[in-house]
Image 1 (cartoon, rainbow, N blue to C red):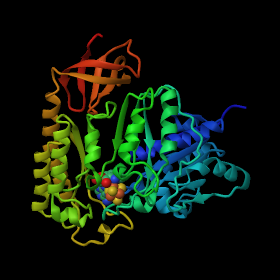
Image 2 (tube, rainbow, N blue to C red; image 1 turned 90 degrees about the vertical axis):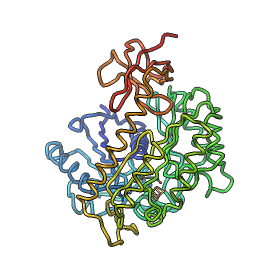
Image 3 (tube, helix red, strand yellow; image 1 turned 30 degrees about the vertical axis):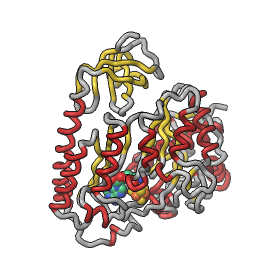
Image 4 (cartoon, helix red, strand yellow; image 1 turned 90 degrees about the horizontal axis):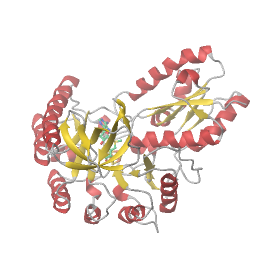
Length: 442
Ligand code: SAM
Ligand code: SF4
């Protein structure tokens, strides 16, 4: 019998990319085959994100595009997973009559059970239990796909911080750290399948292990990953500034495999807004952490997330955000217009900022950062960087793409270079979103 084919469309963050990979592994274990064209699929899964701006609409329009395929192929199954599934639950089934199942964020292990149920009973299943501090990946079979150089590994789920703007604790549940034993086993199997770089994922990796009695700390986990043979590089995201400990800061430069890049979301440069966001740190405390990181490793790359137009943000608050960006000189940043999310405390705040003003602030903030980023990129010209080759660049197989330890994309001619090679590349030119270089022969 020919294997059935599945297609996964993933929206949102790295966490969702990781979940899609684990779902793909479960399906592969059931003799399904992944395809990149939904028209060839027997199963389409839309893995969704609801962190920002009308994500439900994106999901409904994605589903709308697949409706026609379902008409032409009545056996086709369509499911929704992820944060929008968790948020909308049965409502999704009510609104989309051709939808076959809804899989919540902590229910991904039930995917094959749901396919069987749908096919045998005609029932349209929906499971969205968050189940306390339960690890959704525990005991799932591991089938790392071959041919990969980099991989994500989720080390924790959910969040207990309840920042006032954020939906994550409501759709991903309470913070739960995976057992370090399971994480290390997963990393060993990724390494055996050829992976050279792992990125440890969590909403707040700095608090890894804190709520799991007997578990090791995040810094100890980094040390254990450092000892896994075959792994050449370690990254992690995201760090919450309030929990960034001196010991973790000291790991940069001390652990040879730990890449010198930290994503440290600031969100706002105004203490008044940080307080309303319930972030748990002030701009002064954030700045102290930046100084401490740079004292430990002067060339460390620091990136951040910023929100503009949080309810009540006045012009002087926004100017304080610009001032912090200027002061810190981030290597890069992701910036977002504030949007109300269900269940969050900020959504009940009055003093909403008009969309045009948010947009103007976003443009101003991004143009400041563009100048900083391009100055930082130009500073690379003429220098030599260690690059991990990840595969062909968008320009074709003659050219390869990879990243520096500080997470900058580098493209360079190298037809004979295979993915997974650690190389020395001389940076010739800084472009808007990447660097161009020439390989230095060994
Ligand atoms: N855990 C990370 C932290 O503590 O910073 C952030 C995770 S959140 C999934 C990713 C980013 O989305 C946040 O850093 C924030 O900038 C942005 N974000 C979250 N909720 C938002 C909202 N309601 N409106 C706009 N941006 C939002
Ligand atoms: Fe959301 Fe705050 Fe948790 Fe980050 S730390 S996931 S912003 S609640």
